[in-house]
Length: 448
Ligand code: 5AD
Image (cartoon, rainbow, N blue to C red):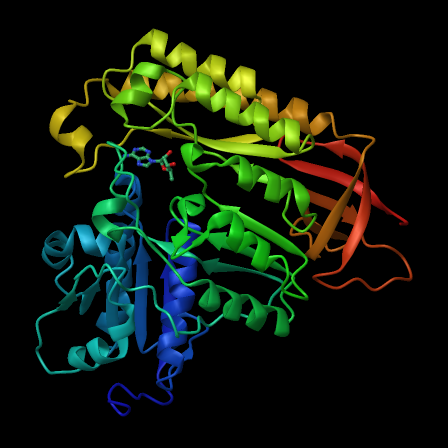
């Protein structure tokens, strides 16, 4: 049906919430629509189609989207022909609630329906049509053959795996993104080469449990071996790995290749074995510590970050203290710390009553943030006097006299523009660190 959904001149604006995979999915939708003549609108006012690509991982993310939807009603009131769509994980989970609470929404589609987006938008054009809904999950959909519309840049994402099979008891992802499937290595390499040809220097491979990646005989370490060979790509990152799928082979592969960055986001979730078991994480804290030790033994200067949930059902003071102790022992460079948010349909919501009051959760979270901030500050301070290799991203937001970029180990680094030397995004420089906050390194360019 080559002619269906052709809309030359139509403009689309996509607003994205949630994880990096959602950002990548928005680029995918942009790519699907661009083949049908749509272009990107610079803002909502100039858009014929407004899509909000949503997250369902915590209740707060969903409440924010409802807030946004009531705000976006303004555009429909001003220009009734505007199509307003809700896409992604929250659309998958809350199709009925969305159409009830925001009946002016024209389109509700889940993460496996993006290939059909142009046809679905056509259906929205029909006068007085009910909202168009497509939330079918598809075990086979990997969006092979579709090219995401990536803005010109130096750093981008490639989705290598969709869905999740782990079923952690707190997590909505398997329900809204479906079963795990790996994208073929050929498709992934085509995308990486395409990015390199367009001047990209860094790729981040994405999957919910990215190192569980499997496609026929190719595992994640094999995939990395191929991706590092792509000429022009100078840095390879990936997120997020699942601890028990972290094989010695993968550690060896990371250690072997300079191009694979020395940074890992490794979600711990809790330091209590009892809680880890209730969460159906497949490791104990001791096993996690051993993994961290093994990785650090092979790659001594690796930086690490993590995710922690506080206030999981039944979490006692002792459980919580074990989480604090785990953060003290491991000393992550930084951490994303969340309050437990009950998600309908998950095992925890059915079987484990959300017993803790908000005050306790809030107190534990605040104390944990404070502790982690202190650890981060110490780690960042310890970098003073060292030299880090930075890929220039552009001008610092704070001061146009400064440039910024990330170190190999993912630390935002800010330094004055050098005199008499024009640096552009994607250039690499060595920066000697002279100062630090708990989230940023400050320094100056040195030769070499
Ligand atoms: N409540 C709070 N945090 C959650 N996460 C996932 N599900 C929930 C939930 N129900 C966190 C986990 C995960 C990160 C992406 O979000 O820490 O690693």
